[in-house]
Image (tube, rainbow, N blue to C red; front, side):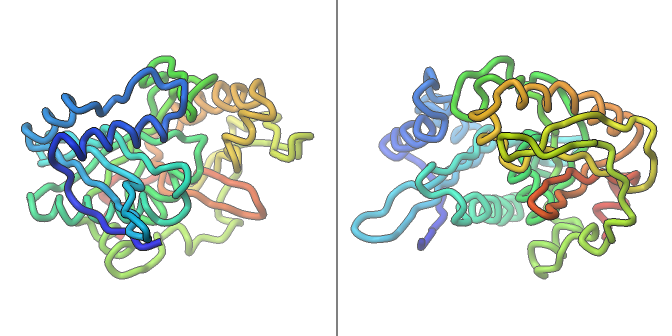
Length: 286
């Protein structure tokens, strides 16, 4: 797939954005969050609207879009992502990564220091993109951020989220994005990480959460999450909800104790969120 990213402006292309969002969120989405009036306000208030076009013949198609609100964070110029979505027909083709990299370039032009957004901690692909591929860091956990949603990705689960910070000029980001180096946690051995979750293979083909070891300590802690959340939600929705309810306490505790979410570890078909006991400056400075 040949992807080109550009800034989107104008009523007609914003109507295309509406259709893309509904395609991303599924048939149960009542209306797009980023409708034409909203996109107009984002555009006029200094926000950022990017589109990723699939240029493959016979005609270019909007494969994904990213919408950022302008703002500040702790006194620094910033952006906050309102929406990032990729057409279901064009997932796993690098579209989201291309949008984020173009976003960083635009941020550099504006003097923006930090970009923030929410990720679902049970979705390893979101953590992998944000932390492993871009160099962002997870810094807080909040329950039910968006209330109850009934779209394709959220139906049946509480919308608990981890807030990530992407400091676009930090050494960590520069190393991962510009120099193509792996984030620091890739150099850790599995023996240097303690696993808090106890799981077993389930009849659905995915792991079943048995218990959480709340006594485990150490500089690097792993919390297992479903390897394929959507497949689990379809095959065993009650088990998916149990993962949400059982892990929220440990996520909240780790952040409260000074841990940061620094990466996703994928091993033998299993996914683990990796927490490190370190301050933000130390993690960003590597």
